[in-house]
Amino acid sequence: MGGKNLSNISIAVVRRLPKYHRYLKDLLDKEVYRISSKELGKLIGFTASQIRQDLNCFGGFGQQGYGYNVEELYKEISRILGLNKNYNIIIIGAGNLGQAIANYTGFGKLGFELLALFDIDPRLIGMKIKGIPVLNMDKLDEFISEHGVDIAIVCAPKDFAQEITDKLNKKNVRGIWNFAPADLNVAEGIIVENVNLSESLLTLSYLLNEKELLSG
Ligand code: NAI
Figure 1 (tube, helix red, strand yellow):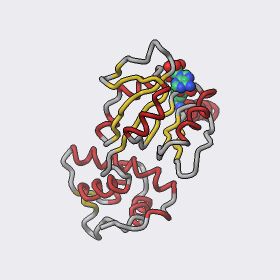
Figure 2 (spheres, protein in one colour):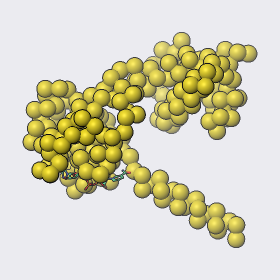
Figure 3 (tube, helix red, strand yellow):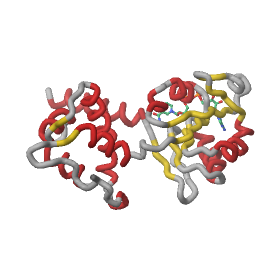
Figure 4 (cartoon, protein in one colour):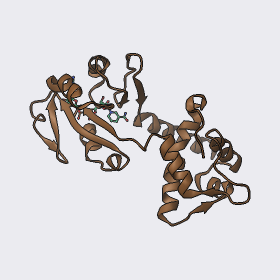
């Protein structure tokens, strides 16, 4: 099953996969083991044809007249998302956001192991968040060389985000999950995924206003 070359998959499809992953996990938790593309579409809010098209990108999983085997599909999408591996992660900037992320246990369950947080504030250095140490930024280089870090989560103020990225560029970090509202210049081979809650909130604000305008 599956096993298609992933390099030609459009990013739009990739961005829908976590949603499939989440819904399929919910179905398994409810002991639903088989589902048609129509039912899955109704649940997720995609059309049945969208679902068939998306899943065909990876080699097609369904069987005519049977639908999808939820467990197999869940496992396959987990594998496609790289969740059959473990990732070492660190957080840079142990303020409000950095600590909130460190306190969330859900990422650990997906295989993302938080090794340490880093900060420059002496009041934070030496603290532990859920048992994970906050280390001095001075120790970043040495720490990455010693432990190997796949993903760095940038939760520092935007004015420092590039300076931090320059440090990461010199190390063997594979990905940056960037929360700072800044466009980062990264070394070749490093992948950046930006997250911005404000953009999402502004989208909501737009939709609220649009609704108000349309209703008179
Ligand atoms: P905060 O002020 O509570 O925490 C920032 C931490 O970064 C502080 O502990 C500070 O000592 C540390 N820091 C400063 N310079 C540093 C450096 N050079 N190296 C390492 N650590 C350094 O701020 P908060 O609220 O946690 O926000 C952090 C960042 O996340 C900001 O850039 C903010 O704009 C952004 N943010 C983004 C959101 C999003 O949806 N993308 C949502 C909330 C915040």
